[in-house]
Amino acid sequence: MYLHLGNDFMVNTKEIIGIFDIENTSVSKITKDFLNESSKKKRVVSCTYEMPKSFIVCLDNDFTETVYISQMSCATLLKRFNRKIDENNYDKNQVK
Image (cartoon, rainbow, N blue to C red; front, side, top):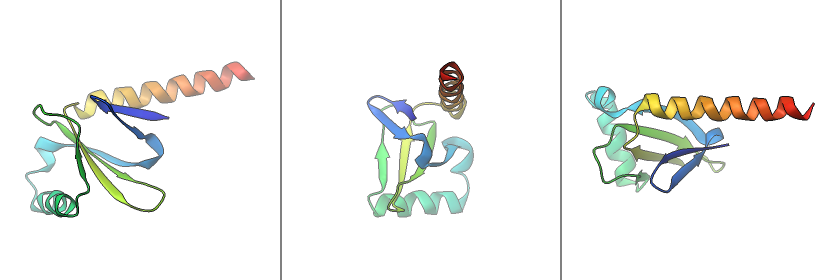
């Protein structure tokens, strides 16, 4: 399954480590340091030109960490994620 993060960006849901509200979490020095280090390592992908509302941390099969910055709120991304899970489970139940 894939989660649409905005614009033309999608990530595999299996790679998602966490979805974070950028306004609430970026007040922490640890989060600021994490985002700065990720940026220095060129591991940040901006999915928007608008005001960012969330960031999504992903880890791929090679254990490479990528941070996606999105204009979508955490609540919207969670709804999309849950809808995909519900659709997937519904499809599996139909096959039986």
